[in-house]
Length: 71
Image (cartoon, rainbow, N blue to C red; front, top):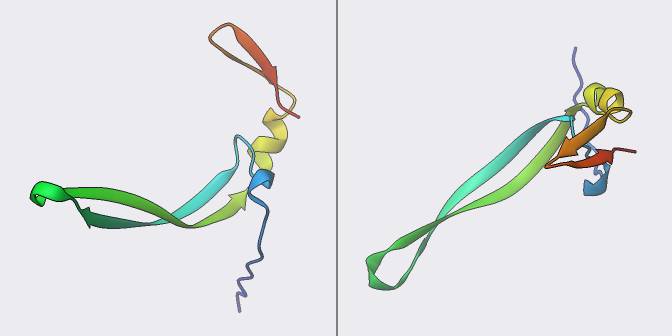
């Protein structure tokens, strides 16, 4: 038998390279002139696997000639 357990996690614990599942809702908000604005609302973010972020935390990443090292 498989037991699934969830616990709250501080959003700052998510790192680049983590495998996550995002649950979102789409909501249409009426605007003036009969137009509708589509909004995406984040409902849940589940951390599935953090192995890749643990590996890449020691690899420098460069964006537009700026090098960052993830800690």
